[in-house]
Length: 193
Image (cartoon, rainbow, N blue to C red; front, side):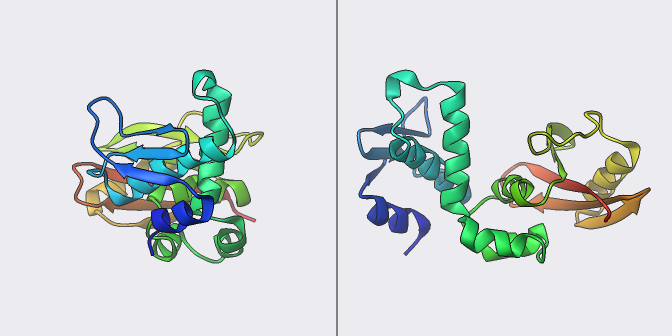
């Protein structure tokens, strides 16, 4: 039983797989409509996000930025439940966590790590910065440091995962090419204890 089947049965919702021109997912009542052409981790994410709106009792006519943020957090918990995920965060690398939770995307896992193990998360897609952030209340340099950028460039050049330490910082870069047109590096930067 895959993640969608499991959660559909558990929460008494229905799923309709149908491609619509202007959206990949939406919800009507307790029915979640999903684009079946999506990459599996993306499909799972959209399902969990829409299920979160149902479970949080969000009204379709009142979807605010706050509701979207709340649904994202809830969806991450549905995909990577705290009781299963949290015990592994400090003992496994991002790569090992991805192997343990193959139905979740690298990015969802990386963002969920931040909930339990503060770090700065930086994402480059096709050598362009697409995300840089940290947990709420965590102070970090908004601008990427030279050692971080050097490690990201090396990950892209060598097409591999790499780690490095620099002046009290532990950096781990993950090169990701899943054959979907985008080559990505996810970098987690932490203070060395």
